[in-house]
Image (tube, rainbow, N blue to C red; front, side, top):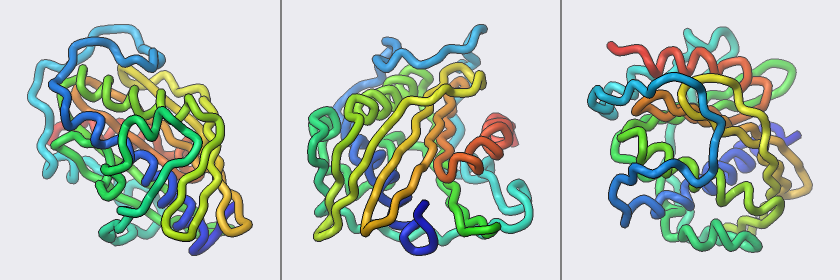
Length: 232
């Protein structure tokens, strides 16, 4: 597993791949069709009549250190400089466009993000992203991300002289919210290897994405969704 500074590199690579897909939504109007990825669906109606929460409201709904428990430290958000990022060996990701690599995630107007380090027997990380928009646009946008990534069991992401070997594998998503997506990202860089779990849950007009060490994602996903759905 990647540790310390190498862990940060590995996680950064995973989140960069998500950022690569951001431009896919820039030229599209909101679409009422189902997501192409055919995610798992939970029974019942979708509570999407209310207006999507603002970015400020989403920020208030993010997990914090007190929610996570002892041993967690929030990481300062730093500006990314990924203008030289290139995807090799995954046509679906290349088709979505690498010009969005300098972005900070999916291209939904309302968004919030927090990342945490956890120090136990080793240093691990977990990150939460919240987005709000129409249910249809959230479904289609995140569906494209997972479709593209899962279409390529292995590929490479390069940034300058750094080459990251990546692999993706679909995993069972928990029965939460209205739609669910989940995958394992395996990547190697500089002789170190890491596995990151990425789970996305859509609940009405809110999308919750929790990424990081698989155990931490499983531990905190329920509370992330519960807090994200709580009106303040």
